[in-house]
Figure 1: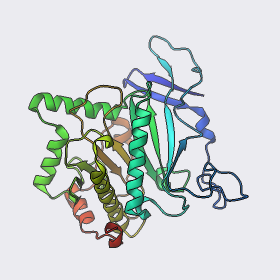
Figure 2: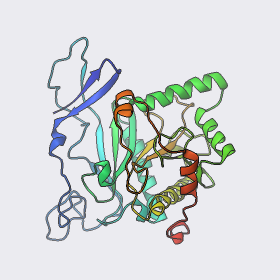
Figure 3: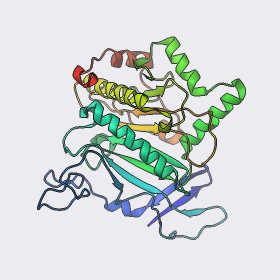
Length: 331
């Protein structure tokens, strides 16, 4: 069963998807459903002995192209809608071990082209309003399959956080005539203390208003709304700074850093969004190597984050981390 239920108090949709209770949870090493199918072996999600990058629809999706009828009848107060949309899995590599950090620049560039293709194709569906590309990495995040992979959710509505970003961006442009995100980037470049890494076309920094101790945002220098606006050289440059940030995360404490990575792009509902600006946000849950930041009473109950650290200090720590494998940035 899968449906969307309206929360009239918070004015937002909640997805109910009971079939996800049965999704695969940390399968044994000798059978990973995301590995290539071995000759004569048990079939996996990839019916081929090898691959570069693969996308396929999630077996346990929050959204479905043809969703079932809702389990309950709506009322005037409690609206209900079928959860029509698409959920895809993106396999970064045929190798079971490792992470996106281990991928070559060439492979990350290839992945960016795949992300661009999926954003365009899924966004063109009549019922899709927003395409969210993201990755959950690490057991503490709740990952149920350790094979290097990400996900794509094609929403039938614009999610609440993106709605807030769009609203603030529009308000700022109407008031100043400028892009809010361009102004944020300009302020970070002017100050300099929170910068983590720079490339020709992108800048990585811990924002002034960071909620997580090591929260890094990657902004495009040029005003662009989505991956569709980046020519090949900028795509490759995005791969380079993405790789740089990942190497710094893993080099900080010489461990594979867990994180949530989310790509923020303009909606695909056919509207005009000149006030929006492409960026990527990382939310690592660690505040030290051995301590996690939990979303407890204040964060979960009020929606107000408490950051126990100074962004300027955490950015300096990440900035000082050299790449673990310099050759990876010279490929």
